[in-house]
Amino acid sequence: PVQAVFIRHRLTSSPEILEDLWRGRVIAVHYADISSTEPNDYEAAGRRALTRLWKYCQSGAVVGATYRAIRPDEMMIGEIVPRSEVRLKHYGELIYKTVHLEDVTEVTYQDYPLLAAIQPRGGTVTGWPSAQDHLEAILRGGRVPWSVESLAPGQLEVLCYEYMRMKGTLSCLVLPIGRGLPDVDIFGLDHSGETVLAQVTHSPSRRVVQRKLHRLKAHQSTGASSVF
Image (tube, rainbow, N blue to C red):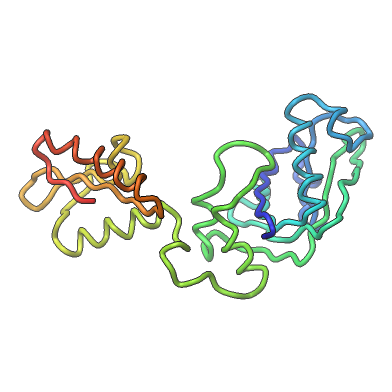
């Protein structure tokens, strides 16, 4: 399958340069101002980024690109066609290493909030498998399957929280969903003020499910109600 890629443009450049890249449907990295696209000519971070760019150019990829300094509420979705090339682009003394995207569409986070919620935390150019179905659906004008597999872990946690609240199992949250105890995704209180702990797990591995269930049970000694 075609790989999904995320790139964030944290370039130390002017808004005018970023606007030019955006309008030109170009993604770019900038690690050193040398006229080379050869990864081994760069230090570690630049070498990694260029190696990945060349790999995606050879195989092809669907791309989600952010230009937050000029488009904080938008993302560019496009495609690197197989056998593309990394090219040099000069802006005065600055030399960017760029790749052109095809079939580009611009989307807002208001319309696609998930794309803001599941962005990789670090790195400039990285794989983005959790967004692959969504990026391809946007590019092809389709829809992701109506399936639990199409939901991100955070969406599953919110879905389970809302279900527990609607059923009366949970009255309110004590901690943000998914960021409480290591083995607990939902930490809240029921209508009588008693603690409710919940673990949300979706996995094809019975071993993973059993391990997470065992960890949740360890918290029952506190007297809290637990839901798996």
